[in-house]
Image (cartoon, rainbow, N blue to C red):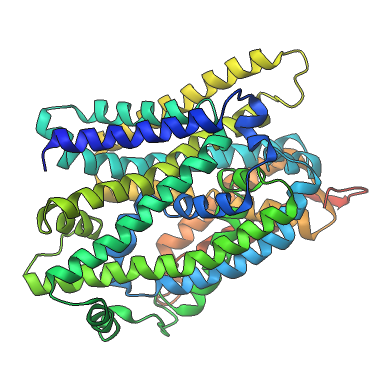
Length: 488
C-alpha cells in the first residue's frame, strides 16, 4: 500500500464530498449556512448525526479502552438514551418556540448580555480545543503512516486537511454537512463492520465464533459494583444522561443540525432515531475493541502503552493492505463529520452571538456572507495553530488533559440552562462570568484531590454533574428575585 495510492484515495474522498456540496448547496446564503433553509429531511439528519456523534477519537479510543474498562462504556450509552429524551421533550421545544439560530441566544433573553456571551464563549473555547484534539489524532495517524514517507512536514499535512474541509463547508454550511455526513457515516460503519470481519478471518473464526469468544472473555464485563471505581455502573449511567444533555442538547454543533429540520416534530423524530441507533453502533465498537485485544494475545502482539494506538497498529501493520485502507477510510469518515460540524458551529456562534448578524440591518446579505467567510477562515486558522501547538507539546498526557479541561466548560452551560428552565429567578448578570470560571476550577480541584479527600473515591464523568450543580448554586447566590417574564 503505497503512500501515493493512499493520497489518491484521500483526495478522491474529498472530491466526492465537494461534489455533493455543489449539488445540494446551490445559491447558498446565510440562512442556508446557519440553518440549511430549514428543509433538511429528519431521517437524513439522524443518519448523518451517527457519524458526527462518533468522532475520530471514538473510532480509535473506545476500542483501545476496552482493555482497561471492558464494556462498561455501554452503561454510559444507555444513559445517553434518557438524556436524549430530555432533549426531545424539554430543549428542542424551547429552541423551536424561540426560533433560535444560536442556542445561546436563549441566555440573552433569559438572563442578559453577560450570560449570553459567557455561554457562547465557553462553547467556542470547548469546541476549538475539542475539535483540534480530535483532528490532531487523525492527522497524526495519516502523517505517521502516509505523508511522513514523502518528507512532508506535519504542519503541511494539517494545513491540507483543514483546507479540504473548508472547501466543502464554507459555502454550504449546515445544508452541505447534513448530506456529506450521511456519506461519511456510511463509510465509517462499513469500515467498522469490515474490520471486525477481517480480524475474525485472520483468527480463523466465523462470526458466531467471534461473538462467542468476546462474550466469554473478561472484556465483555459491563457492570462494575465498586462505588470507588470510576466504572461504577450508577455513576456511568447518570453521567451518560448528563453527557448527552450537555454535549448534544447544549451543544451548538449538534443542535444546529436539528434546527435545520422542517419543524419540531421532525427534529424530535430525528433524535429518537439517533438515540436508538447509537446503542448497536457502540456495541459494535466495543466488540471490535475486545476482538483487537484477543487478536493481539493470539498473535503475540505487544499492546502499545498508549492503547489508542492498538487499532491503527493492528490494521496497518498486521492485517494487510486491504485492512489498512479500510481503517484509513474509517478514521477519516469518523473524524471529519466532527471537524466540519465544529467549524460551521463556531462560525455560527461568533457571527450570531458576537457579531449580531440577526440584528445588523445596516449590512447587506452579501456583506454578511463576506464577513462569514472571514470568520470561517479565521476559525480554520485557529484550529490549524492549535494542532501545530499540540504537535510541539508532543506529550499525549498533557494534550489529553487539555482536552479534558475543555470538557469542563460544559458544566457552566448545564448550570445556566437548568437555572433558566427550572426556576423563575433572575440573576445579577455581571457575576455570571465569574461563577462560570469558578465552577470548573473548583471541579478540577475536587477531581485531583478526590482520592485523599473522599476516602479513595475517584471522580469520573459524574464530575460534569458536580460542575453543573456548582454553577446552579452560584446563580442562586447571586439571584435577584423572580422574573416577571422569562422565555421558558
